Length: 162
Image: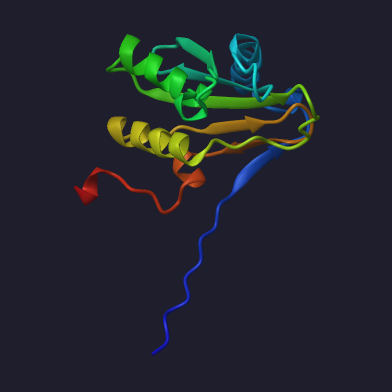
């Protein structure tokens, strides 16, 4: 028996500087960078800032929150998605930006969300039946813009399985 080969492919836009991006993306990325200051990361010194733009024009942001009991940490992505779900439960997300900073080393490539955050992002797209672009950045280096959260988790689990 032989299986049929399959292939996954993900495309994205890459920018060398924020100024090369559309202005709305620049603004959202700045909000994510500002959220790094809200992060509480006394143990790892790895800060994550996330910002989302809602269909009503509101922009929300949040940082990661560490705990000495590591499994209880809150990721910035889920912090801001949870805030949106609580404050604006009927308003879809139109874009998300995520940036990372490490006080101990320079991160020169885009930081990507963990698997749990990717799953929550995909669930959020499904909840509203609307994909949203995701912008990723490190401290320096290129910035990438994916067309949708599902591009980060191509073989995702969703409500159609239940």
